[in-house]
Image (cartoon, rainbow, N blue to C red):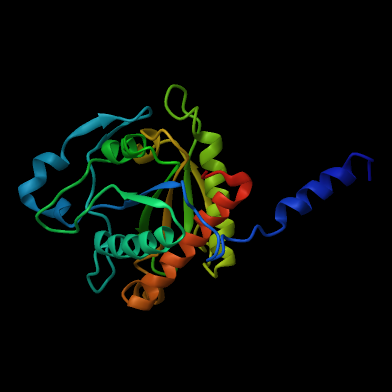
Length: 252
């Protein structure tokens, strides 16, 4: 082994050491965290079809305002699940002193959007330190587990947030795994880097999309449909955010 290999190996081992999530006695005071509960119940309401058809270029391609999201086989909408998780996560983060802002404040058939470009622009509007978009996947039923999407480098769009977003994504993955979350079984890695996501491309701060699990998988669907499951997903997200904020005080 060459002499350079030893310090390199030491660095890799150090990177693998766990960074503890913020304990209850520690504080996120001063941190501003933007949460984005994916979709909205009213996105499927025919009354809002014209709003949903709005389109905008996101740096790579033209995409529509928003979508309805997926659902469990028993009919739990993704929009409702992400809303429930966001409410519990907000409480957990606020208990540590963070200011938490949500991209939407309702979960109703009488509301639509916001459009993905407005969700992406929300973090700058509220002065957020980071942005976490909460989703659930609609993959083949055998697949399970979470994955995190970070923006790839897109000149003129994400060049200023790509590196920070990757750091956020890796911290989310590590923190969530330590909190018991299972990584995806249907993708090759829990980290997915993409340049086609408007919510990320329109952002101004480190931003990720977290697909908490597969709504088409019976076991995960049952967990998503229970109050205890919603609480668990919120705790896992909080662990990921806490890990990110604990490293070099990134959130303060």
